[in-house]
Image 1: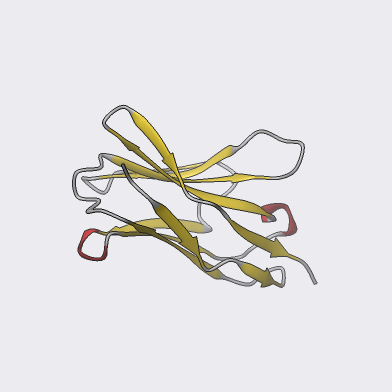
Image 2: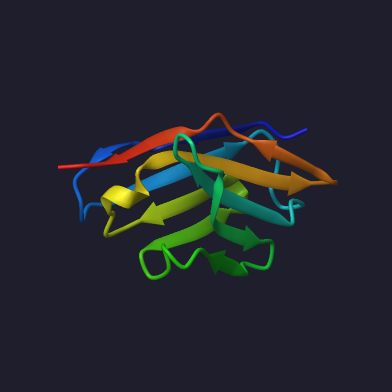
Length: 115
């Protein structure tokens, strides 16, 4: 099993930045892919960014050029650097790990972009 704990959310003005962290309960070295998703009430959970063990990354079109996903295997942590934030980025952000055929999720962290 993998427990995931997100942190770093909060309230930020449009154009601002936040860095989300996802701390895993075990080494993430063997976890092939980790990802960040987001969800707003009444909508499906949306894939934001993924990163693989070989540092391959993918991003949703809506965040390309603004968000950066990274991983620090020594700290068992995945990060999401979010710059140039927009009100439409407001959501609960969830960390995901796909490991040995199972999906693992954190509890989520709220990001609110508002003036």
